[in-house]
Amino acid sequence: MSTSRLQHIKDHLLGEYKCAKMAAPYSPLTTHVLNTGIGVPGAHMALSLHRLDPSTSLWNLLTTGTTNDDGRCPGLINREAFTPAVYKMRFETGQYWESLGETSFYPYVEIVFTITDHSQKYHVPLLCSRFSYSTYRGS
Image (spheres, one colour):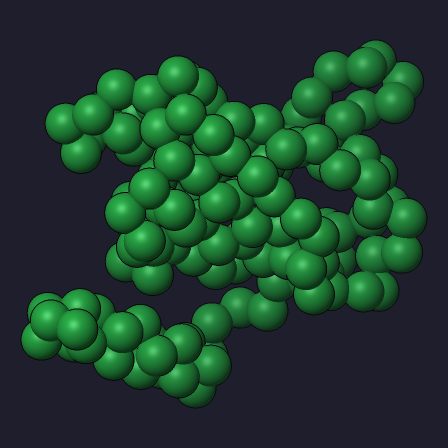
């Protein structure tokens, strides 16, 4: 394994340790973008969080952000604002791949999910390459 790959793994692990020790605002909803095409975090990807208004069937923008060097976007939503509802995270994958000098089949990815128990913690990662993506509900 190359020295740069080992350094990347070390930085990744230390980054998680530093984030855990920092006084970052707690968010019951987290995400992590992974570039599975080359096996690195999806750093500096723009994203937004929306909530569906059931009375109008319109999406209300709650927040926008950009993933950090580790592919995470801390502080998406606070506990008070996190209510049972249908949510959507939109990831600007086309811009991300373009910033890497690549093209992508998907200009953006939207993950829509339902929260019924807002007392739980939800982790909604995005694993993506230029021609595919997947997600799952973590904790």
